[in-house]
Image 1 (cartoon, one colour):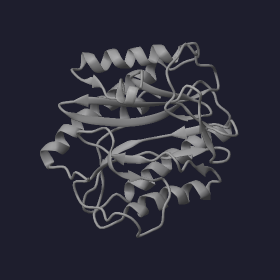
Image 2 (tube, rainbow, N blue to C red):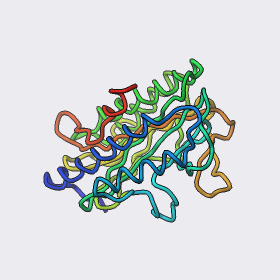
Image 3 (tube, helix red, strand yellow):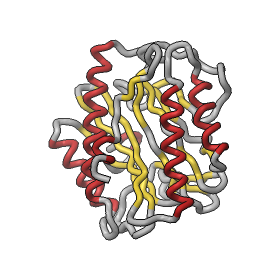
Image 4 (cartoon, rainbow, N blue to C red):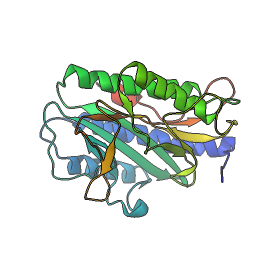
Length: 255
């Protein structure tokens, strides 16, 4: 079932996503060689709780942490650990919160120090594709228009789209209908109506699109061991122009 949100509910979702954005901003100040991903997770959990919310991922379907922290060839759902970030790593931090009964969800892939040019280009292309998908989240379009725009940008830049992992509706539940694939055909799929709130989250690989699930039961990893990037915004379908509820401003103001 698809739940279209009222303006009052969208305001609550905006508050949740603002806290996610600020949490990712706090994390961005700490990312450097030598810090463990578990330490990043603890910083995020403390900040979320200090702001009157609950970590949205902690305990969700049994997930053990506040952040999904995915390093290099990990695509998504990486579990924070004692691993210490190294110069040249990339790290996707996916964060969710539950505030006032509504979820926020956003992700950003960070560089740790200097990274190789082809990896930096992967991040650039993935982030650009996110906004190309967002541009299609307008009333009267179809879900396939979002996926098509994302897929086209990947293929034009010779990177691959992970197909098994998709975006989703979001509201009182972290994952709601509809699923939002990062590939598709124009004019296909659900017709978009104002008030639909979705998380759009392209995941692109530098190598082939094939993936597998790690033995920990959570992390999704590229089959060829090449890097993967992930960016995500929570978005409201509107007439004429989509409304982005999440934000990267607290990250990019200091980077």
